[in-house]
Amino acid sequence: MAPPAIAPVAAALLLAALASLHGAAATGVFQVHRKFTRAANITVHLAHDVGRHGRLLAAADVPLGGLGLPTGSGLYYTKIEIGTPPKQYHVQVDTGSDILWVNCITCDKCPKKSGLGIDLTLYDPKGSSSGSTVSCEQEFCVATYGDKLPGCKASIPCEYSVTYGDGSSTTGYFVTDSLQYNQVSGDGQTRYGKANATFGCGAQQGGDLGSTNQALDGIVGFGESNTSMLSQLAAAGEVKKIFSHCLDTISGGGIFAIGDVVQPKVKTTPLIPNMPHYNVKMKSIDVGGTALQLPPHIFETSEKKGTIIDSGTTLTYLPELVYKDIMAKIFEKHQDMTFRTIQDFMCFQYHGSVDDGFPKITFHFEGDLGLHVYPHDYFFQNGDDLYCFGFQNGGLQSKDGRDMVLLGDLVLSNKVVVYDLENQVIGWTDYNCSSSIKVKDDKTGASYTVNAHDISSAWRRQWQESLIPLLVTMVCSYLIF
Image 1 (cartoon, one colour):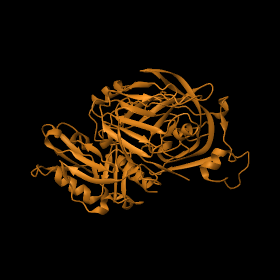
Image 2 (image 1 turned 90 degrees about the vertical axis):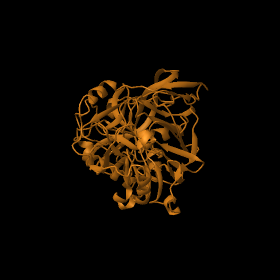
Image 3 (image 1 turned 120 degrees about the horizontal axis):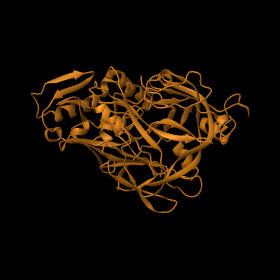
Image 4 (image 1 turned 180 degrees about the vertical axis):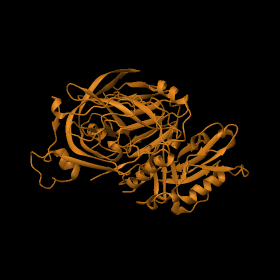
């Protein structure tokens, strides 16, 4: 299995608004890349989404690379610099997890090589003049665990243990060091900035995190936990606790931003409080402008019911009743169509434009916010005139997830999606993700243009020249113990 927190992204996304260490919040840049790898069987990747469901129930500018379609298996990652003198590390970017961690010099079984063709680096706290180990008595550790750990002494480091849904795991201890990145300084311009961050120093990796296939130096999470880099910088008054992404599956590229997006304007819906993820209240579903007649309990919210927005999952999962009703409406005018199953995906031959031949789906949420999903979003092409359905029947998944609506990357693509954790709302609007957005620099009050990039076009062209089997990237998530 691939490592947890793997997400498909269109080539070259951007992230805006990490702050400088001093003064008001500013904007900044991490270079993020996307890499495809091959897999023999799509069911391996489908298992990642199943694992992620287990957890779901329990201005920096970051250019990303890749093509966020299910016909590729991959991940997106950023290059960050840590320490003094700074060293470069490649870490996965995951909006569904919390902590930043990198493999440590003390790790015996950490990968030394990567199938992604990148150089791996082990972090050495003693090799950085600005690095220090976090003891179990320090405030960060006590706040993370709610109290001092049993047997805690000043000489004992603050340990962490993360287990992912596919059985992969990482354990180690927390350290604090200087994090360096590119800070946005004007329209399309950057300069170096840095801030202190507390992150995990990985001493032992289990499962696929120890494999070389898709190995990286670590993971950077953007969840709501106080341990996340975003939360740390926000608590220090360095950034606003807001991030956005715009995933472009049409031409590649896009935007991923931390900070206050001022253009385009985005309508929002409230996040449901006291939930572990980005849960929202769905009100109804239209297919082709006609509302589905669904029982009220479909839209109820509880621990094992409701709707989750999760950019870490590729596909969309629906309760069985919803899935069947949507399928019936989508293919209402194609009664003679012949289907075939390709590695758990329902596929069919179709000549012509799917956008002309099939209806638009709209998910309606509290606050009169609609999520428009077009045929090119819920179908993906797998060969000449062969299309597969990107929605899955949740009733065939884990029993705990069968009554949930999980909206993944396919339906979130080609939209600016804003996670405003300060106001506890989330919103989106259809957008050309290969264009640009404007992000406010709270330090100067100015609004700067952040352009989409395609930093992975060379490898993407190479990938397009070869025929590959149907692949889908799924994201596995973790529980912190």
